[in-house]
Image 1 (cartoon, rainbow, N blue to C red):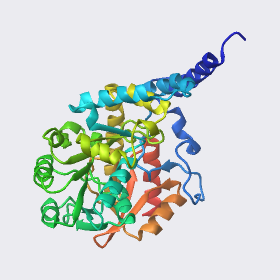
Image 2: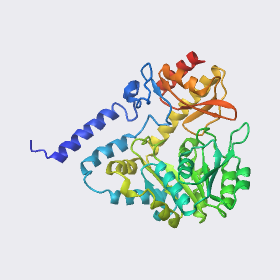
Image 3: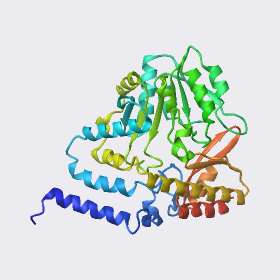
Image 4: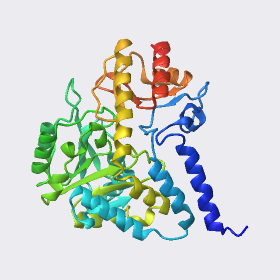
Amino acid sequence: MSLNRREWLRSGLLAGVGLAAAPAAYCEPWLDKPELAGALPPTAPKVALKARLSANENPYGPSPKALKAIAEAAPEGFLYPFQYGMQLQKMIADEEGVAPEQILLSAGSGALLHATALQYAYTNPGGSVLSADPTYESLVRAAVQHGMTWDKVPLTSGTYDHNLEEMEKRVNDKTSLVYVCNPNNPTGVTINPESLRAFVDRVSAKKPVFVDEAYIHYTGDPKKYTVIENIKKGQNVMVAKTFSKIYGMAGLRMGYMVGQPDTLKAISKWGGGVGNLSMTTLRAALACYKDDEFIKYSLSKGLEAREFLYATLKQNGYTYLPSGTNFVLFPIRMKGDDFTKKMMDNGVSVRQWKFDGQFWCRVSLGTMDQMKAFADALKVVS
């Protein structure tokens, strides 16, 4: 009874972490429980959800180090975590090779995409945002909602890559912002890094360029594909990154933007900043940001699932787009809504798109048990 309240809470949380992490550092004993594999979709399936493969989540995170940090941080939740925000800002800046004032933290990169849309919508009224189509729509959708127009450039035929040549031609006086998602969502296609950096070189001299690198770890070589070097040259470029994917922190909400100090200061008026981050999230991010062992593990498990998925699709007569992400897009043989409903009826949630006159399915990479559940469902649905 002499144990004080804070120590009691800390010991209880640490015991919970021990159970979550045991028996091995990266085991996933809970993943065979559908109710813990992810929240059910708005319309519950007729059968138990066996695999939630519709949200591009990483089922192997947060890392044990992040979980331990959360447990240790929770009793200090009454404190504002500004000092930890500054530590993380410096840690990221050192890793990216920029100054701390060139890092803007936020509760996920999505908030930064939205804040950027607001900045350019209200400082350039009547302007447009230029991007590929299809692409991740968070930024462009927010821009349109606040008065901008969306200048869509179709992906290249057959390869479904960004048509950088056409995008550059479309930059005009009305263009307020150029948005590039690399690797792209929903296609998973990664842009040639030399071509992208040259594009950013030229276009950023005319208009600001935003590059969304949420999935860049899954390329296997983030430094090869990033455009951070363009920022170091002083160019008008912003790069957004997230802890939601390789770090497995989608539910904890942690992301950041790299850019020029004045640009970040302007965007921060609309969102972002340490003030909207929790003590537990910041401490988890500090613990796992340079956890190379877990990053390699997480990536290897993703690659294993991706190869299994490729083989499964081939065995069932499907083609697919080569992916640099934790999801794969492939063309399907029926209407998208029919396909996703039938998959859900077999306990597997996936997403669907329609473009280039074709229905497509996007399936996230899960655990091997989840990928096998997908394979079983696909046989039935096909």
